[in-house]
Amino acid sequence: MEATGYVFKYGDNIDTDVIIPARYLNISDRKELVSHCMEDIDKDFIKKVKPGDIIVGGYNFGCGSSREHAPMVIKECGVSCVIAKSFARIFYRNAINIGMPILECEAASDAIASGDQVKIDFDRGKIYNITKNETYKAIPFPEFIKEIIQAGGLLNSIKEKK
Amino acid sequence: MGMTMTQKILAKKAGLSSVSAGQLINADVDMVLGNDITTPVAIDEFEKARFDGVFNRSRISIVLDHFTPNKDIKAAELSKRCRQFAGKYDIENFYDVGEMGIEHALLPEKGLAAPGELIVGADSHTCTYGALGAFSTGFGSTDMAAVMATGKCWFKVPSAIRFNLTGKLKKWVSGKDVILHIIGMIGVDGALYQSMEFGGDGLGCLSIDDRLTMANMAIEAGGKNGIFEVDDITREYLNGRVSREYTEVTPDADAPYEKVIDLDLGSIRPTVAFPHLPENTRTEEEWGDVPIDQVVIGSCTNGRISDLRIAAEILKGRKIARGIRCIIIPGTQNIYLEAMRAGYVETFIQAGCVVSTPTCGPCLGGYMGILAPGERCVATTNRNFVGRMGHVKSEVYLASPAVAAASAIAGKIASPDKIKGGE
Image (cartoon, rainbow over all chains, first blue to last red; front, side, top):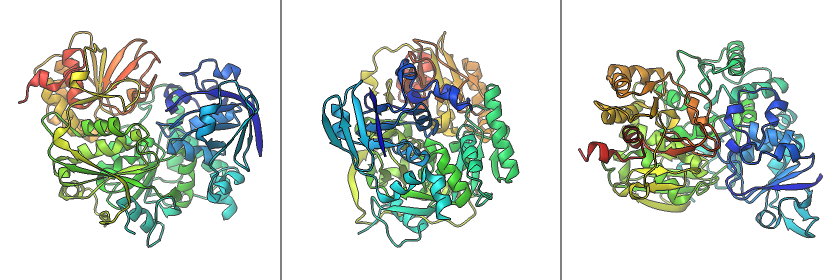
């Protein structure tokens, strides 16, 4: 699996309240919900984001609430991967469970700038910065988690095992 | 090698003699929880996956607490979906308006959490039940759907930080100040993927309510769970609430703690977390002059009876400052009743506060106290992120019920000592 896109870069501790503010959590319609993605930190994000684009964060990305709406809106607006130095554990879990690709990589997070064009090779855990002609190596997932991702999420993997 | 308290519970629930940090396991769940925001997403996934039914109708709790009593039509639709699902599968612990309370205040009160149990919930503050010696942690809606169907959940066994508590809390200092102090010390990702395990002689001065507040905010340090050693205070709380057998766990003498932090409770002072992260903690001499517009006393962190008692002690016979809105939210119907019987509700209303039905409402910027641009609130809640209680240009200051009540009277962030002295 591969992905190529342009980067939206944010800092440390990007919390689920800025990814999707709780005031919108009464909305069941996914398209309407997605239109508020990243609204409280970057009003232009949703106007600019294109399928395949990549979000890069610092430490503790996705901290705060357990709302699955957070990885869900990021996935639904076409983002192909979130790269961060570290993820808050519930966000990490939710992303895997719904099949939203994420990668932990300090070097990539430090080196990549907003607007850089980046190509990701998920199988090898390689992040290639086309703009800067640099390659970074992400921490690979354990086999157990790879199985969930390959099945297309947690529920599919449970069904497969039955 | 020995195990931490968390590792012992996870090993037992996974049917293993021992586990170690980093190991991936599949464990049996004693209780799974969801609320009116996360459960509808879980129901969608549950139905999409076409599961045959729920694994155990008595081991699922659904609590309508975030946007209820329904704040608008969309919220009403979410509640309705939960109600229909609970009806269809005859969910035993379904709590609707009238019976409901804020989930993490309600479950312990109803005896639905006990030592040694494994509790998961589609709400990040599910870590609260560690106060009773349980392993409990938050997760997402897809996880909730999977557990409702199978009764099992995957975990990566966490490493742990041990907090050795000694000494005694000073007057007006509570569990909230202790946990804010700890988050200020280790940071919002200081316990990322780890357990925070609490023990030591200092436990004796921490009430169950103090411990629930502390375990509740383990997530605010990035923790997977917070867990307390069980003692007589725990047993007394459980007596009459939990009739089933439970297992108390203690850490092994050689438990592999990554870090051991000694904390003298007597050294902790009233602490406030300034915007926009819970780690931005300051003690009194660093507060400066911060005029405020609103005070909220409540939430799954601090909406319990002892929280209301402390607030009432400070507010009794006084008036809140002109121009301040003070919203007080008892965590459950029982806490509400108890507060009424004790005269706290009358104290609050005479002081100029409003008292609401139990709800998470303002804590997450849902309703019942939303802030306008530029407004500031001192809240006993758990998060002060950008836009958490309303407009992105509003500010939330996290504090104990004592500091919140004192601040309501002063019209600015204030120490209870300033209002009441050291009495």
